[in-house]
Image 1: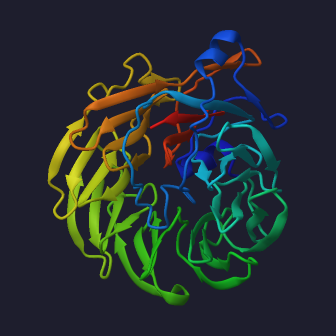
Image 2 (image 1 turned 90 degrees about the vertical axis):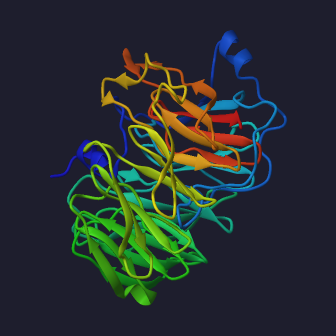
Length: 415
């Protein structure tokens, strides 16, 4: 039997130790907190972040530069029960927040509640949102004999549009591109299933030899990270190539300019030719380092034990920042879950946004110089301290950075 915490660790998702209660949303309370988190009328802006690290290639890049209010709060709202540290996704008017029991839609301008829905799954995944449709994959912490799948909601009001159960694996993590949702899963009879965004009908399905994480998709194929290596699937799910790795890859691959970037072992990160899977370059780090990558402008930005920028063409290191050099708090660099490295990245024209410890950091894209740090609050629930750190992937749109923490707080911060 595979229990929830073991499952979350296998997915690279943090958990906090308290029982899940009824879901609800509330604004921060108390005179000091309300004054500090006064809502700005300038929040929001154009643009969207449809999925984890913005697009189906997981590039992590969005255009734009810092604002005059950089690092100040637009708003903070709380979702209960959180139970995860994960990514938020954005439409032009809403923020979609995954929680322990469903998905919550918040108003992007002020963080107010819009709607929430609770799929039958034990643990819903990070959603995707595009063309007015929100899709949530289903995860289960018990052995699953029947196939599971995903459920789609109207982004405006949460009306259920369709549900598919034609996905094997025990969980289904969605990526969306050009009207097709790609659901990757495991550990029971794992594979990748492509379904139509409009109706959830299966377009193709491929069974694989090992469980899969979130896939990356570009115009030439679907890229899959598995314990056995990195794999590329073509039209209809055909197996185009498979690159064995020395250890278990962690995190989703990133695809840019004909290259696949992926963690190929607990301490190595590689650039592979997207057409053939051949290695272009590889770097070695301390063996327990976990990487997240964002790529733009000929540079790949990596978060792990350090924050590093490398030349995309050959892996040459351009700059490196330790947590202290990037502006992280030394006092909150560790917690009761152990040491914390940098989290997922978002990159703009001049800034890299990344979580570390109990805060969100912004550093200069040119050299990693700290710009600002927004610390997260701790919470007390049932007499137990819930640490405010372990932020999920930041989502940048308009003039705001959005992130959701393992303490259940969704932050909108001026970028």
